Image (cartoon, rainbow, N blue to C red; front, side, top):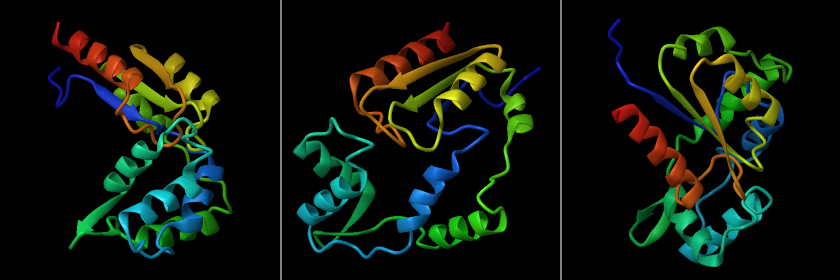
Length: 172
């Protein structure tokens, strides 16, 4: 029957999230203050995320900072709900680190093509879960984005190629 969308692209998320990644995010989300300058924002992001994005250049860290903070009078300002950290920490506490899965809900996507993008260094979407997603969905493609963690920035050739090919297939 009719559907609201022709396809779905999931960027480094799935029906089962690795608690290690959630714990990492919960460790800083809502706890940090805005850096004093855009240069400090790039340095901070690099310190926090270098192991997940080892291939980024200095200029790319500055671009990452512009995506991660909003500009307020020429200075970086936090650009997310700071209560997200509180929610994550509460969820981890209530579930004792064993997060619920959403495999049943994932099956609701079976009627549309699915592109699963996973960062090579992701600590949120494990390779095993990503492979299971691709095998259980009747029309899924799993693409690993090299040199990226959670979540792939979607600004390099591997992401562009995968997304372009997927959208092209949907149009035909």
